[in-house]
Length: 198
Image 1 (cartoon, rainbow, N blue to C red):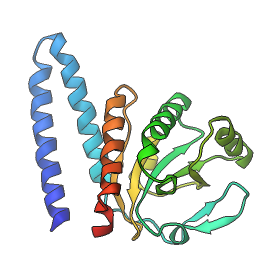
Image 2 (image 1 turned 90 degrees about the vertical axis):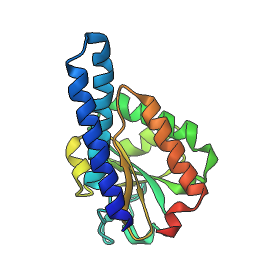
Image 3 (image 1 turned 180 degrees about the vertical axis):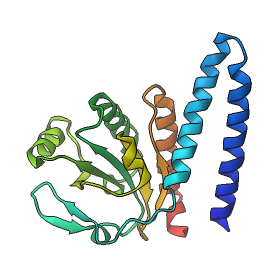
Image 4 (image 1 turned 120 degrees about the vertical axis):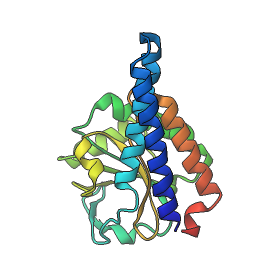
């Protein structure tokens, strides 16, 4: 029932954003900036609808920094915020999201945040972690096999203890306020134990 309501609200929101963006496209150029922002929000909502409620394989193989292997269900015992990126993605985008994540994560335990990265060479991952003082648990994984992977850009999602994706989010390169609001919302949900109820 909750999933149907979320889907219905998403459809309504997308319809409103489309309507507003069509109207704004026929207005003067100063208003066109608002249209671009509406398109960004539409993209975020669309991405969320495509990826949420997907269930990752419990046997997904993760490689730790030392080269040892774990399977996904052995590391997820409660909801975790996942930041997914690859060394092939935009480096300034990754750095910006890592800065925001580090800055705003002080309100929750570090073990609630996991990085799913993809580096062809684990040494590069080790160097990236050391140079950037990354304190979050990090695993190397080639593909999660979800729609977000096709966008070739870093993204966030919450993975609950049933390995279901919730609250996926593709950060905007132009609008860090969206990422700050997203992180704030997720951390509030963690504090309120919202993901344990699902």
